[in-house]
Every structure is written in C-alpha cells, then in structure tokens.
Amino acid sequence: MIATQLDRVRGEFEDSEFFRFLGLEITTLEEGDVELRLPYKPELDNVRSTVHGGVYMSVLDTVMGLFIRSLGYDDTMTIQMQTQFLKPLVGGAMTARAELINKTRSTVLLEGRLYNESGELIGHATGTFKVMKFD
Image (cartoon, rainbow, N blue to C red):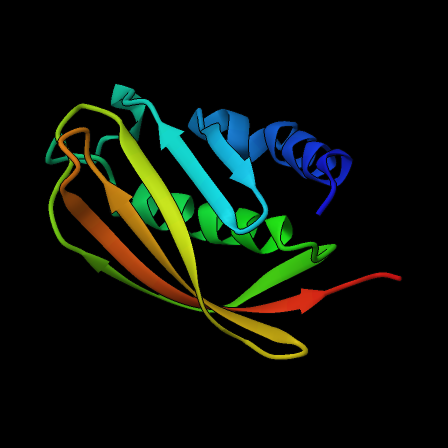
C-alpha cells in the first residue's frame, strides 16, 4: 500500500470522535503492521478501579479494524468478536497489536492482543470482519 493511502487511513482514525474520546495513539501504521497505545486515564476505570472491560474490547476492535484498513481495504465491519480478559489493568498504558489469521474474498479473521506496560498479555480477542474494496 502506498504511503498516501496509509496517511488517509491514519487521518480517518485519528479524526474519529471515539478514537479521540478514548485517547488512542497510533504508534505503528504500516501495511500489515499496526500498533495502538492507550495512555491510562482514570475515566476509563470501572467500579473496581481497573480499566473497564469495554475499553479492552473497544481497543481490540479498533486495532483489528485498523489492521484490516492497512491491508488496503476501503471499509470493514465487525461481524463477530470473542474476547478473553486475562489480567486487570490498574493504571498504566495499554498497547494493542493485531495479526492476520485468515482471509477470504469477503471476510478477514484476526487475532488482537493487549499488553500492559510490562509487556504482559492482559487481553486477547479473535474477530471476524466483513471487508470491502471500492474500485
């Protein structure tokens, strides 16, 4: 994918109200190589003073969607996502990465992983996404 397409994708994500609301940062965006960082903020905590599971899911969904867009697809929609919460995050930033498992003409299956600042795996998801190219 040429750099200008990746720049357009970066802009679309960084201009998203939800992306900005969460405070996500794109740390890597190359074809098939994506990493997001979410700095800690107390507004993301649940009643147990750990980062809410819905934040985990949102970050995983976003990193997998961004990964798909980095492959050159024009649009994607989540069909199914299964998430495992492995460790609570108490303060500190999280990092998210995605990896391709399989793709067909109309769907992509991915794995997303969340890490704490110590590099420990704190969440994991697989997701199936409908993908579209507009030619």
